[in-house]
Length: 223
Image (cartoon, rainbow, N blue to C red; front, side, top):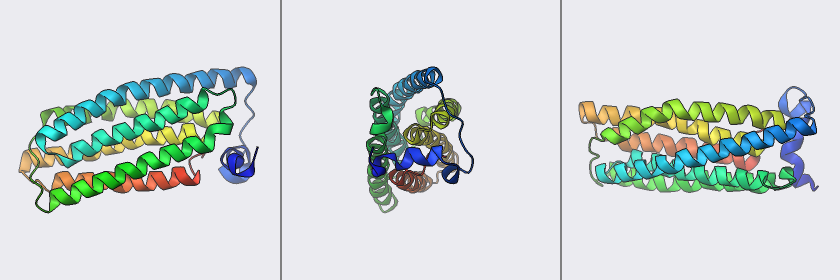
């Protein structure tokens, strides 16, 4: 394996990269963890497809940049999960790790670019966001569902020493944080009529997405 392809996985096998040496995982346990990651990825894809449809639809109706951004983040999460599913469909997932990380990073960058442009447009005369009950309910549900999926996949990814599985779990965890940001923005707009809270919340989503994209690109998710 080339050094460029193994740099990420090496960091999780070497105590200098992770801060502590990881115990070896035998073949039987590795097979169990591979299947677990695949099931968790499938669940993440299913939930995020529904989440994206609801968020983008509700955001379009309410002219909410934050809701549309949240829906597009769900699309980015689907792309991320598909990349990990593709990786673990291989008999040798480690050889596909770097490519999977690149796909995850690009999904973050595309999300950030669109959300930033749309938020700036909204802040400077693009129209005020309306109240969205559907968006508030969706954000609240995601605050419950996303941490469960993220935590399970992160544990499996760390035990495997898979940077892409951990990166995808952080993509899912990001959705939890963004759900809180979205919920706060929607509630402030609904309760106080502060329309600017919506695009500001969307810009927060974009900023976090850039950070996560850079970490994925550099392969800094293993630990």
